[in-house]
Length: 147
Ligand code: SF4
Image (cartoon, rainbow, N blue to C red; front, side, top):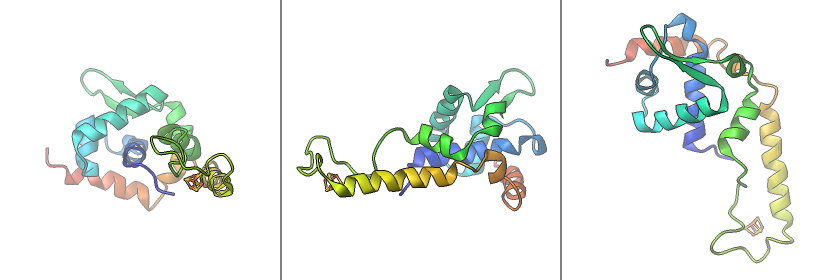
């Protein structure tokens, strides 16, 4: 199983914002810089997270991105499911559909494996992800920003 780059960026943003109180408010551009990814890519991931209710942007002086209560308590499994969507791990349908797709045992096994992958992430929360040693490293990234 491989996560899309989009999901990975979104999870990086969530982890960074989960330790915000130790580093002050951040803009999308700052999160992108800290995570060493293009601004446009990070902006799309941030927009999706806002749509999910995981984070919000406070306007004005001292404003910036912050996690919502939902974002702090969110299950990583739920988050990954929402970000990845309903897609299967193999392309059985589409322009050139596989002739086995209606009766394929491999397809069922891969669906089960995908569910098991997500289920493994279900007990984890965002707070779990930023426990030491990850949290201090995330906070330390603010010192590496160029702007
Ligand atoms: S062999 Fe099975 S899993 Fe592979 S593309 Fe065909 S239907 Fe899907």
